[in-house]
Image 1 (spheres, rainbow, N blue to C red):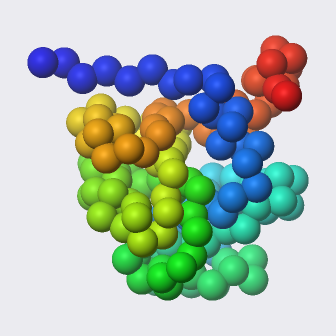
Image 2: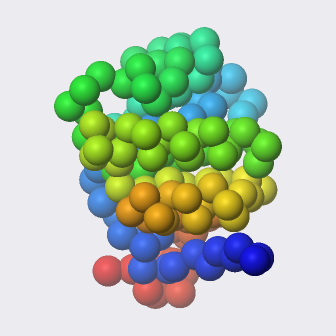
Length: 151
């Protein structure tokens, strides 16, 4: 069986426009990384609260960082887990998001451009999570606005 995934414009629009908190896995203070720039855009331009997740558990842009999703405190409502890790690592991140879905009220997993794992996407969907794969919220926001399809 071949697993496939098709991103849904309505889901992406809803996730980007929702004011909910985003966990950005792979976010550090390295200003050369896309994760830093996208997280900053989400925070400054889109008004989102960001939780950095990185093995070093760094504070980034004033936001407390955690080493894993499991380290995020109980009662923290999370809208999206945004994955800035390689395709070979994203399955473990998705599995961790699934494991903490109820505790953190996680609604969605977003895998960034170039991050592809159809089996992980299927596991997330089966667990009741929304899934976006192989694209960037900043790029999609611009595209959706340019097409005049935002609400």
